[in-house]
Every structure is written in structure tokens, then in C-alpha cells.
Image 1 (cartoon, rainbow, N blue to C red):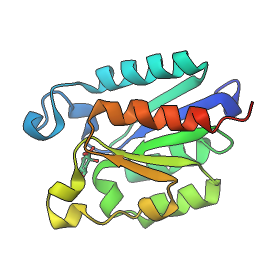
Image 2: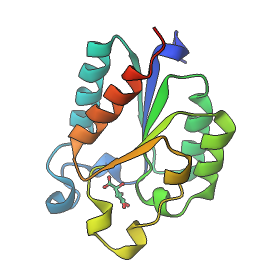
Image 3: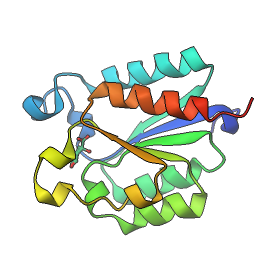
Length: 149
Ligand code: DQA
């Protein structure tokens, strides 16, 4: 658990994002999840924020990670395919009172229709999609600017 929850950003990644770099590079690019983590860490360092960075392929574990983010500055959530299916994740965000920025590497609205619906968006502060790794950086910038000084 982070030492200072109110200055901690949780970046949570869902299923198959562990395969970034080799997974459908035409859609997701060549950057690996380690590259995403490096980008998040340097952005958090620049803002003086702590970072918790996690990836899981399991929906229930994502629920637990969201619950554990209660009291944090905010969450950058790429729930991957669970975005389009999971009421449990939306409930967890509401239950924990989280400040969530939903992020997708790809432009989900330029893809299949089943990716156009998100259970996360109605309970998120905002959504960034289609900007690759840059979306994670921007999401952290937004959370940092909401920090009480
Ligand atoms: C994704 C988009 C989702 O539709 C997909 O299921 C993913 C990744 C993205 O980052 O572009 O796994 O969240």
C-alpha cells in the first residue's frame, strides 16, 4: 500500500495488455507494458506523485485493485476488453468513490461496434482514446492538476 494515498496515482491495466509490443502492433503499436510503466513513472515523478502500476488478466482482481485505490488521487484505468462487458468494474469505481480517467491506446470508436460501448465511461471523469502511450501521460497530467495544494 502507498505511503501517501492522496498523492498516489494508480494505473491499472486489464487483460492482454501484458502482451503489448507483440500484440497486434498495427493496432496497439510497438511499445511494451514496461514502456507504458516508464512513461507513467516519469510523468508521476515530474508531478511529485507516487505511482502504483498493475496489470491483470482477471476481472475480479481488477475489482480488488480498484477497491484498494480508494482514497487515492485518482486512477488511470485501461480495463481493455472488460471495458465493454463489466458491470462489476463500474460498481467498484462507484463503491470506492474513485476519480477515474478511462484510457485506451487505440481509437475504439474507429473499430468494431462492440468496442463503442463502455461500462466505465458513465462513472469516469473523462475518457482518452486513440493516442497510444501519450494518453496515459495526459491522464496523469489531468489527475495531477486536480491535486489540492
Ligand atoms: C483497449 C481497447 C479494447 O477494446 C481492447 O479490448 C483492449 C485494449 C485499448 O487500449 O485500445 O484490449 O482497451
